[in-house]
Length: 148
Image (cartoon, rainbow, N blue to C red):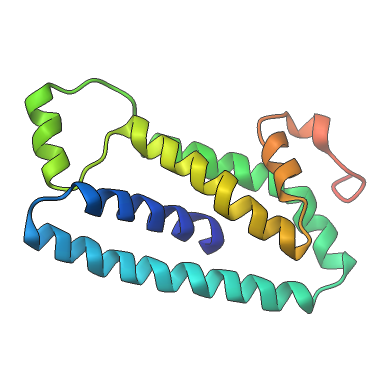
């Protein structure tokens, strides 16, 4: 889970720090980014170490679950990024405090998943890109023998 959420959080915090004008808020975002960076790295190292120590009995169910995990992750992230129009003065003030607009946050989410997360998961041996592409298909259409 931290491979996904913390990696995306890092990308979002980086974008927010580029917007912020308030020094105190910038320091808070810097501290949060440091924490998220540590959590993301820990998740990737943990996954890599555990993956090497597992066999098909663990890998197959994880692979089968991955589309559902991606779908849940995407839904939760999008719920935290609701679309809507705010008055220009509110948007400008929010940007100075480091709030990015939901449209931009959603772009960052998808860019991070596609450019950072999927390649790393694919590299360790998970079929992550395929699972990401299947995340919105009904479970009954993507079930494998592992889930039956």
